[in-house]
Length: 221
Image (cartoon, rainbow, N blue to C red; front, side, top):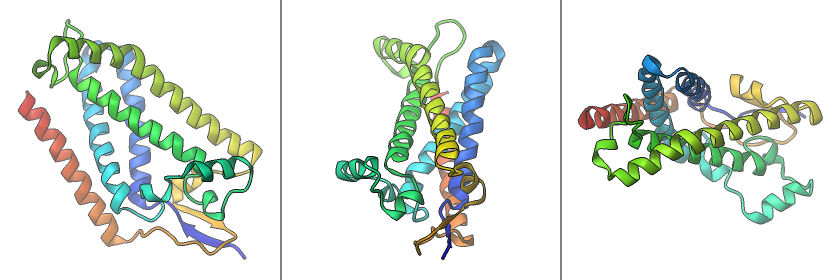
């Protein structure tokens, strides 16, 4: 018997696709440079707001969006790699997918942090660069421009490759649930909460995170 499971609540789906758009904007504006850097910073502030939201939503969000749902012990990862995964591994992030998610979130946070401290010594400087020692600004700039960008592009390409692999080899569509929210399961598995109250809470959290980022930029300016 097939069961429909609400795996990705609406706030998580909105976060995911907003992050995709902002990441594309960051890469594009960085390549263009010049006046486009104004939008590069705006995309960066949006990404920071989204990441802060996701950190909070990872604690109070829907069942499968919570970090506790996809933090796996080494034994669970090994069992999954041996083909003996549990039913819930096919609902939310499986042990390999979880590693990809944490890597992306971590390196995105690092990229945003170094962007805030970067200074190209020509026309563009992060809002926090003037508060940091020159050595810190130099290191942050080098990482942001020469290392972090390439690491993130590599992780995104790996993420996309995994989606294609699961679609072709395992006949599992990972994109559709992130669009519509639901997955089919042979087992009766708990769904994520996704009602008006939880969505309203998510909106309040995100607006608070955006206000915090806006306030930081204004104070730094």
